[in-house]
Image (cartoon, rainbow, N blue to C red; front, side, top):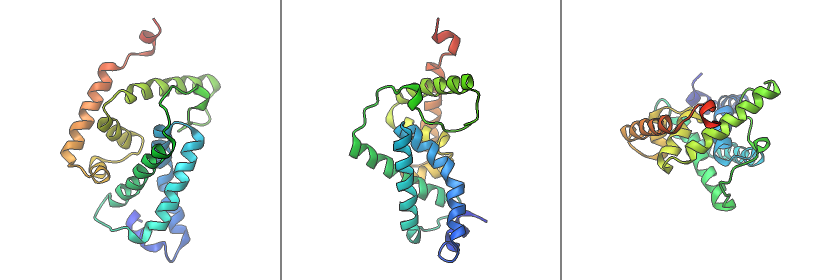
Length: 184
């Protein structure tokens, strides 16, 4: 069943909303956790996102494939911006223990630590990107959106999204150093 079909079922079947939540929670949490950086804050923002989705579901307008994902991530984008307006959180480095666990919760301790160190390093590289490229990159790789959906979220042309994404990846390739080179 498509997202749009599930949306139509929600008023009659609470399991339809559960299925939408199940489909979108991992992507929404990954994106929000990357953006707000503290697990507790990410949990609060994600909870608010899904409350907003539930309250606003009747206003969703199906505009073709990917429109629900774009609609959800527009809410996510707005909630993250609201979080920063309210908290004015600084972007100082976080201790590794405070970084969110996005995937692979059952890693050996040394693997989990290496993964967090890699996440912290990549986060610092992404943070150095220009804001528009950073936003597009995080929507693509943390939110799992396609270019067309990102264009809807940010209200930009799809070619603009592709261009910014390509340039962001080029910027990251130029600035990335393998772990061995970083510690020499």
